[in-house]
Length: 184
Image 1 (cartoon, one colour):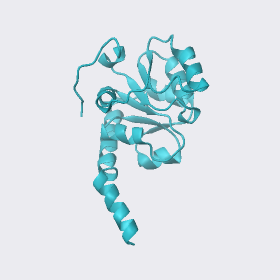
Image 2: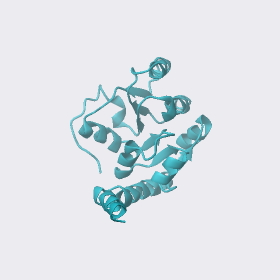
Image 3: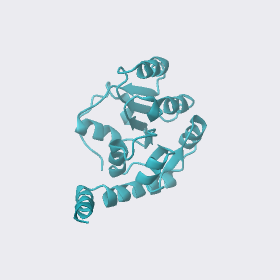
Image 4: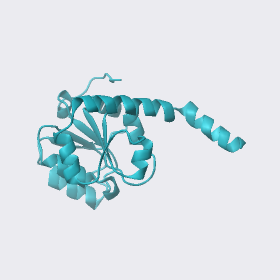
């Protein structure tokens, strides 16, 4: 589903062309450094990383290191769900770097939008996506996937992500599982 709204092209210059996106807290366990490094080696797919760049020395270091790349867009946090969903829904790819913490809301939201996902290879992400997306664990793997992706495979991943999200992560399904747990 594509969200429609008026957007400031100067604020988000990447959205008019196919781009990859990630939304996360800028923390080491979210592997933002690996994502940025992989994307810095290529220029064919712009990357938008939306996060809290100024909340840690890690974020500030990455901001300094990657702000000069014209195809990498380091965007401050967006708390308006309509705006963030607009930007995510227009992306070519969703890059998910989280490596800890279980089922991540930003991953599930990307799945509901039917985005093809390249996720960090860990048990949480594999479980959430039912082993149906592309998994990477280092800069070289991610770089190879983003430079050699197959459009047909992305379409299949997109459909699978939407299907899994609709089957597993609807509130009715979750409430039903909790009710059965409490009633047993």
